[in-house]
Length: 389
Length: 135
Image 1 (cartoon, one colour):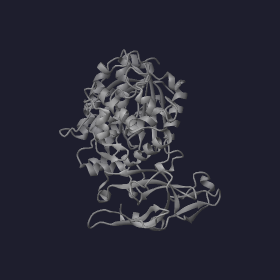
Image 2: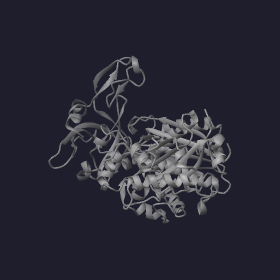
Image 3: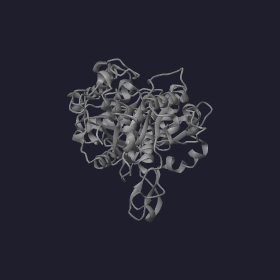
Image 4: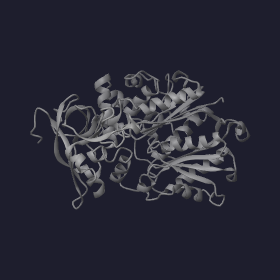
């Protein structure tokens, strides 16, 4: 196996982008990643496209071919593959790209993700997202994604004394970070009271506890680490790429408040990188809901089980804190175009490690981690990146 | 959900019939055709659950998908059946009454409807064990 590096990154703005189509979004992110890597299109061997639900959102499947074509790469007949794992589609596309380069099958690979969520009405979007849960045994009973994460939150509060204010503090922090990210969907600060006074979606989660519906795309260019310096002075190295599955349904999880797929993927990643949670300088985690960030802090080993709420409230996860979490603004403020999210997380790590994150820069960061979840925890993908090989 | 897809599961969702693995004794609801513990050694048979259990966790859903928008706010819960497995369902009781650990029993109820002309789903919901009125 070969070591792999990221030599270029690109990301569209995130938001309700009525004027841009799915294919335009992906091409925009891809082209900016290729420009950033300073390579020619002819160098590209393969393309991986992370997407959750093109079939439902834009009535379009066969997205691998679509993107290869509109990226101008169809005449080169490059291998192009769509990757799906619900909200972890992007993280998984990245992982497939890394495996393709590590194995020696391909040299220069684009791994990207995109989702166009606003071409259909909100009810249709909600229904499509519910397909990430078990349609037959959760969706049909009236389960929604906010509803499933609300049940995690309810039990977490009952068992560990986590408060609604602590949940809200995740949203407040991520909006603060988002206010320093020019690509973020929400660049406004919010207060704890604003979260607590926003409308209830699924008790105890308010609408400001939830990530939004977003259009957007992100892409990275991957290359063998041995040749990465040929393309850029600042390659960012992949120190670990790990993936794990868990039960599709929340009700089948051994512990409702633990995403055991996250625990497994995290442990595999730490082992692969020869690192432990205390070695991680900062992380982009899957905060589709505020409770999800709290669980991620615990399940990735940054704090003990049950202490994620208190840790957030104390400022431990703020930029400048002990372990900054979601400097990009996370899914909550940067936005959550589901198939793009896992790749956008890697783009943020690269910008941070190169010292290009502007006002939200985490000074001196050497090692960053990404954590991308599908559904309520049926899939988890964890990557660790470093400035040094 | 399509008619055949719902029809195929009628006996399970109407009567709370899941499965049991005779090899290890584990009970499964929703039903499984393969025991995750025994895998190829599975000896799967149908099993009718008694329908009693307790609320493991719950939420009150205020914003639902199209099929359920007429029913909001409703209580969604994970119920631990006395035989062991957990399932997702709705609990019919007041919002003040619902709590973690509440003992519940199953009842046959309308679950939802696709539209005025679409299919109406029936299935299993839960009510407090000590108050069977289920209103």
